[in-house]
Length: 219
Image (cartoon, rainbow, N blue to C red; front, side, top):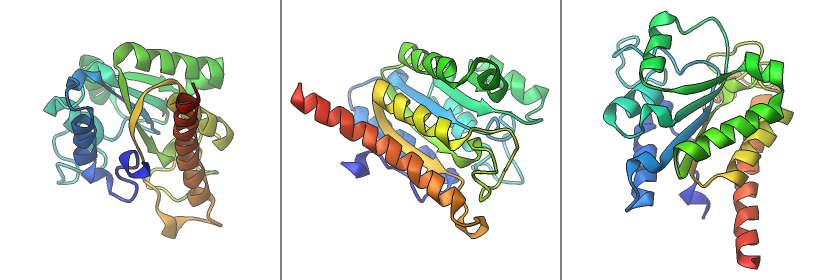
């Protein structure tokens, strides 16, 4: 059912810990190490080496990576980020990522090698690290020309034509047990550009799940 996959469509990132843990509950007898988090993301999800950011321990810039990894919900090596770019985080944050074994694919690499080869590497990495996948999309992974209504717009991001297919292929080729899309702020949108792209990404994921289900029933 749709509700089994759309865990936090309208929740703030600060509520992210709960749905990830619900994904573990969904796995029941599976070990936590079987869950792979895949996140198309603009930055490194805030200041990862900080305990508090602007006085907030569970803000959107801290929670997904640091809180989940420190709590043991997801092992650091099972955390993949795609589409990183910009002039931050700094060296301390990069060191925290290295020390905890996070995997990331920069937009520079995607520009140099092309979307399809990097997509294949991301899927291979996910399959090698865990049996289940949690997909979390930050809308600011798109270039702000396609997603102006977000809190951290940064030039040089994905174009929708590539990200739509990226998400579709991830869902088709891995065992996705949960999915979310965050950081859309409709009041800041122009002509519904951001909302329409977010809508399209959600439909790509759901369509891929439906395709797999139909194929399984016809096999």
